[in-house]
Amino acid sequence: MLFICGGPEMAPALPQSADSRPRPAVARFGLYFGIFAGNAGGPHVPSSDMTAKAGAGVSVAELSTLPEDDLRRRVMARPVPRHVAVIMDGNGRWATNRGLPRVAGHGEGVKAVRSIVRTAGELGIEFLTLYAFSSENWQRPHQEVSTLMTLLERSIERELPELMERNVRFRMIGRPEGVPPRVGERIRRLIDTTAGNTGLTLLMAFNYGGRDELVDAVRTLAREVQRGALRPEDIDEVRVSRALYTDGVPDPDLLIRTSGELRLSNFLLWQVAYTELWMTSTLWPDFGAREFCLAVADFQQRDRRFGRV
Image (cartoon, rainbow, N blue to C red; front, side, top):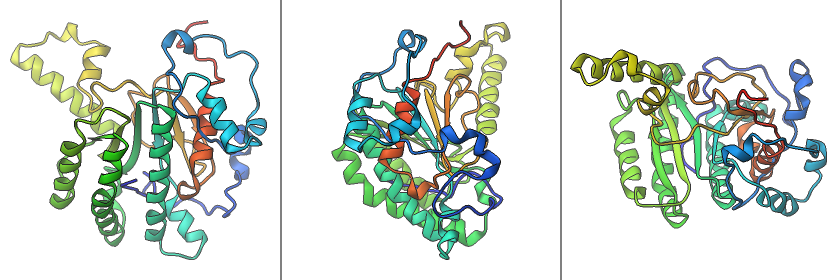
């Protein structure tokens, strides 16, 4: 829908073929480099269900042969993840593979966001967090950053009516300091306008860094200790979680990363301790509803033990 960065990495990645097949270096992860689509409106996954044995599953290859409608019905018949986070990567490579300027990939990435936001809402997912622009991305070429900011401004204005129609609530996570004033103004307007919506909560990680978030949380707790409002021995996981940008949001159940990279890139470092990871070599502009549903379908078959047997 809105905001799209080419991914959180600063350095250009190795070239990738346009057909988005797995590269040899990650071929052993082929199971997760297929095609994953989504399910709609299903029940959420309570902890008791998530810790149960998954039982006999269906392979990704088999799931990928299902027509999209059948795949959606399968997903909707089972508990869906409450919170899905996505590292949207590969816009620049998508454009480069086609002989286009990198910024063309960002424009196509916006279309992929629109599709995934719609699909997540249809599946009944409560929270969707998209890694749009990292605090390291400011070091990219000035022209690319400037174009991204302009694209973000325009996208916010263009997509607001649909967000309202689909009852989507918008939040931003990241440091507000350093955000261009015009962009910040539009983001605040979007947050205020959608604040009363009760459907999908869409979180945009913008000017975000996982280490920045932890540093800011530590500073918040340190100030409370300094004021005498908190004893150091009373600091626990719950208090740390409340000091994070994601206060009030459950940890992600599923983290999706596109473009074939196998790293977290400084994203939600505290929150993903027990998150299921799903990686695909598909570049973000080519990632659509079907692959999102496949990721959810694979998640539904996993055995989540949370440290237990």
